Image 1 (cartoon, rainbow, N blue to C red):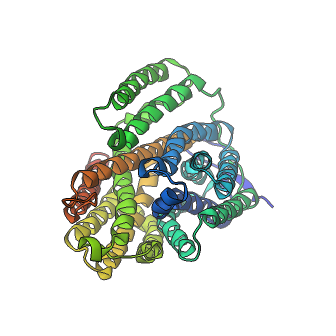
Image 2: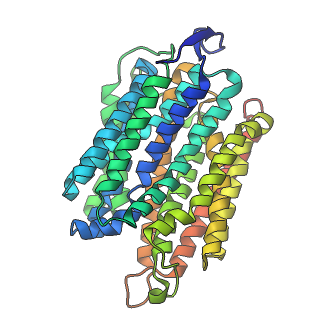
Image 3: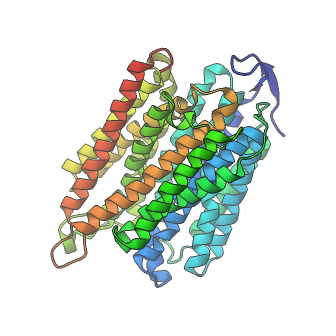
Length: 478
């Protein structure tokens, strides 16, 4: 049974369709967002085990995570644009189906190459969040738009923390990776069912033809850039292959910009990327994505470091990683639901500044105190407050200034930038950890972790400053 729509007036489009059952629609979109975010971090605690299972190097196994980022970076702007053109429900259904298919491939995989292929299929589902935000803006009653965007946006962090918990429970009771992905497939199927039954297609369409040359150029640019970033430590930053990838990224980016400026119906209207109001939202997304992905990787590694062997760490298991991040899940859910009220009183930009400040405080706490389980529980709780508020406000800030029919691609561009921030975090933290090791070993020193925590805190603090400045400059809409 699909929910119905009625027509309501809108300054952007007079044919704006308003859903008559926003609660069910929000539930369906939140479930999908949770599943998508969960699968992104699902493998992080498993990477050491996968290296043993497939008898592969750490660099090779890292592609299990990198492939998802690459696929998501390429698919997000394209599928978001298709959502504006052909319907957001149709594209969400497609991406969830790809997630289920990729999960099944990973669950059946007995080789690293097959698993990487399955993870790439899963990565296409990164487009679900921007498509969901676009659907909310298209179809929800005005008074519920901000809260709904906040709840769906918060699933990015909640799902990430939950992914490590799910993996931990399974890893604690099995010695294989297969059950993790069967659960991912089952959850993806549940999300797909919710979308089919509980959501309705919006009436908003842009029409036109897909900009395939723009999509190919953007894909080439993103793959070159993110591949260079992800492999910089393994190949060496001055290696000819890395320099060639970065050179190719620059050339392809310039050509892509020229094409977008010349075609009548570009894949991405550049003002959605670097316009006066878009630039703040995208810079904030880049820095906040950097901070969040840095936390997922650093905290997982630090907790599992054996204290008796190297003098720091918590000697925890994969399950412990998920348990210590539970406070983040609860506080993120709670404060993301309240974020709509904050935005109504303060505006999205000021709310983003407050949330980012809490995130910065959490990382600063961890840089100063990281010797006990209690320290990580405090960090987890504060981090959840920060990201719960910040991501809810960021979702609104990314689309509030664009026409209704461009909401999908605007949110997609913002999501793309966040993915780039996550890739930068992976490369930057790996470089620091590899470059500062305990003498005579290849184990990172505790000072290397502290440096990474401080950098993550600075990134979140910079987000707060950018958001605060945006709020001052654009008082009428911020």
